[in-house]
Image (cartoon, rainbow, N blue to C red; front, top):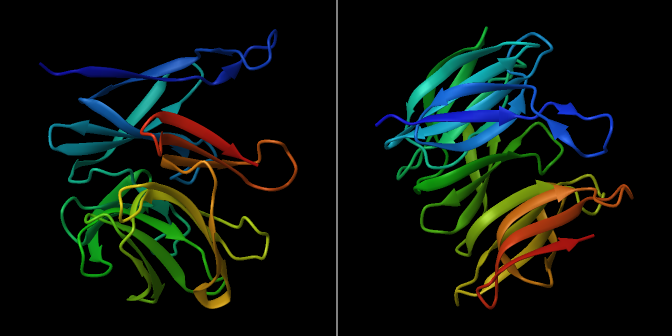
Length: 262
């Protein structure tokens, strides 16, 4: 039986009560499971699209939905996507349009959806490194013309590659298993740092920061308290101008837990 999922995007904040939301519009998208959704402006107008990845069988479909006042307009951007991880949004070819990069399941290949404008994309592929990967993320770690990519390996470890033109060079490699990672300038020195959550070689959870400086040099490693193996979010929770960390997952006792580090 074909399943129909209804994606509800809550767009209006009620004026009578702070933090209360009311439904404005919705879109029907076909598939088995919604695995990713975000807002992005992927065309030339000023109205952002709701980008949704929906798993159907062994493959996924990528949709873009525009929400107007009383109607919606959904476009299928690509189907038959063999990836188990969310896409990375980036300007791959330098044309000032957002493209998508997917780690292709079970291979070292990265599937690229190159934006040709007017919600039209073409598929391409590239390889960064020689190991099978499960997640890819673009990161600016050097403040120069090069780009860095953080790869989560299917074996559980992670690597950082730097790109210049069409060449990729391995600069950091680790066998530590990661569940999630983020890159953000936590110390304010102008270089993004790496925040990682996962399991060490003994199967114990860890939550740590690699503080980086120029030329991808590791200034220091910070092992954070309340070690949790889980999902990381970053925000300025107390409005003090510094990024704070939220991690939710399993603690060292195997219990569901979340921590806020300000």
